[in-house]
Length: 375
View 1 (tube, helix red, strand yellow):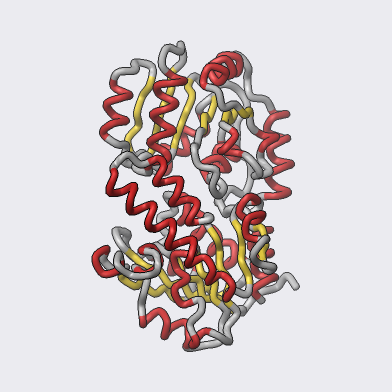
View 2 (spheres, rainbow, N blue to C red):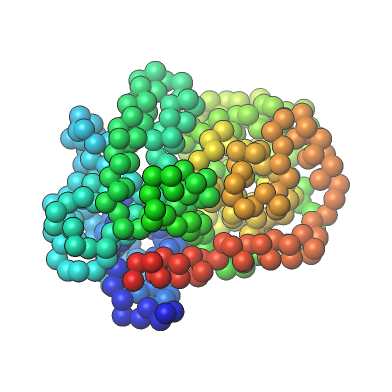
């Protein structure tokens, strides 16, 4: 059955998914849009903190509910992880229990009521955005501040324990093949659904650019670490221009880049500017030190940019390995960049991407997979 017109679905989001300007909410927003395009009537429940209510969401949802996220001091001492306990709302529970429509919980963050008696007769699905306890463990390792490191360690242990509540989900949708392989050892109802990303077609352009781009949310410790690594270990001393672009760069990164003349820092560019930087770069250089989830910036770079040079943790077990040049060693990365800067990106490269991406990473196909399992 491919006609889902008139079907109803609750979606509980950890944040307001508009504007779709960072990893998690990009997946949520474009998932809602793709499900809406199938004719499904969406009842969206958002926890909001620092993001405004959105008229854009009203256009693709039957109704949008907003709930305040609890303050840090109200939830930090809870037995459940803070990212879960801070998303507690009696109003949300009442709204979900008021009908027999299925519920899709976005991330472990929103799963506080997964095992609640009022929802026991509903079909409950969970979209896993990460193996959260492992992600928080990685955040701990990347963090230098002792108190924040302690917080991440404590949350990681709580998340590991809370993950057991996934047994009460009827369906679990993993965002990466690595997460799927991890979860399938404990649960039978696991499905691999790649990240939603908005790209309907490969828009990469043939030809050459004159700079190398690294982009990401620079306020996140993992991305800050990668940006500093690229600036100091790869870019410094090379005869090419490097651009590091992203949201809220740290003072340490600003200071670092200031001393490297061939590196330009673009602070919090708007969406259109980031898309332009991605499209015009000759190389999108993407490093990560966390082998978690699938990186939306990698998908976006492949759909919109030219050459992608990545380290192994960025691409392992994603199905995107054939579309990237993979290298972990910074000196070898310098040599690869030097060679690629002499070579134009071709129509053959674009056609190869289109074949793989359209087959395995289409938003429409992913929405159909979710709808088939939920209804």
